[in-house]
Length: 483
Image (cartoon, rainbow, N blue to C red; front, side):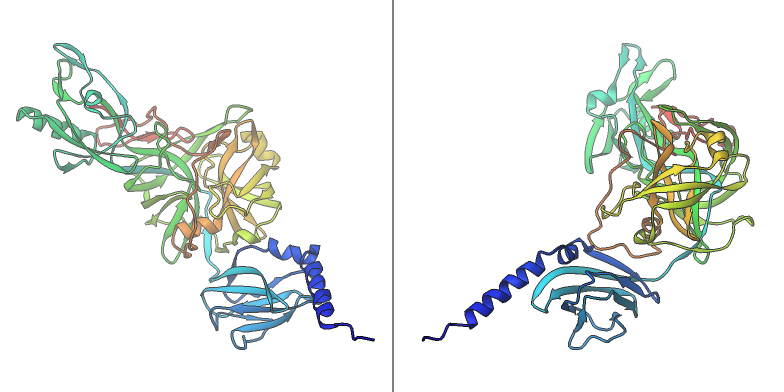
């Protein structure tokens, strides 16, 4: 009787077994593991894989960064059993790639591991006035020049559009609205057209405008409404005490006329005080009304306007600032009870209870919407109706850690809104390195209201000393002049 081939049959059985195991629910759960993982230096992280006694091999492209199960990699790899959670212990800061292979043969998942230090900051909650000076001036509208021959629109006819940023006139970098008046009239007195350089959609364009003479103002004008900055009130999110670096708002400051982020040349923050609350209601976000005066009580300078808020350096600290708390990584934030810190009367920071109802870690760069909040504190609901304008940047704390900052309110439900992860804010402040490949986020979506934004209608009042007054909830859009 001929011998039956056993090797092919055994190979077939093994292949079927491997396929069954590979496509089983526990093993398929491996594919749901994140492609990126951040570990905190000095803190062990336990990772549950599938809970089945299946051998696997983990290979790393770099030695000495982490230990797995308290073992050093042998030949650049660890042999593990997936029945128990894996214990990952970071040894030093840096990045590496881990390749998880079933039976050491079938690669199932590659994970980019980043080891970062635990950052500690002082949480804020204080109201601040924000005064920004932009690079160049932004065109927010066209205006007729009342010339002897009738109304004229010189800049519009020359191709200048709303949303353009005027960066140079006659080869000189524009500093302010008043600077434009000086440069335009200098060209006009010399009898030549005005060379205007604008930025539009990231492209630099050179135009020539023949100004019109305003019989009423008795100056030459381009026929434009322009804005040279932004002013408003928001909330300080945190301070890093060693460097003095602070962040506030939690979202980018964008021009209300163009919805584009303002390119900041310089700015400062000042103390602000809340005088009155207008509660929010369905369809109408509420606001905090308060006052601040620029050039008085300046407490910091602004260095950047990022997608996760403004960054700067605090030059005067408040004795009321509390102690440090650790900053939570996005993966550490969970649905459940939390608190926010904000001001609803005067300058006193208070704590209010909230519920984190959803945590979204699916976006590489979560555009201020990683955390969904529900206000539960009866005092805050009675006073404000929920989240209102002026709360933008209010720190969110959970389990003794800073987890995020309030950014937006749901227009149709003021008791709910969004927050940004604190991890992304400290990265924007360069207190943590930015992950490679992090994408750019979008601006606030329809159906949301940013809790601090610029408005076209300026609340800025020029005084003899160039001082201005702003109102919380109605951030001024900078001085808007007719040129």
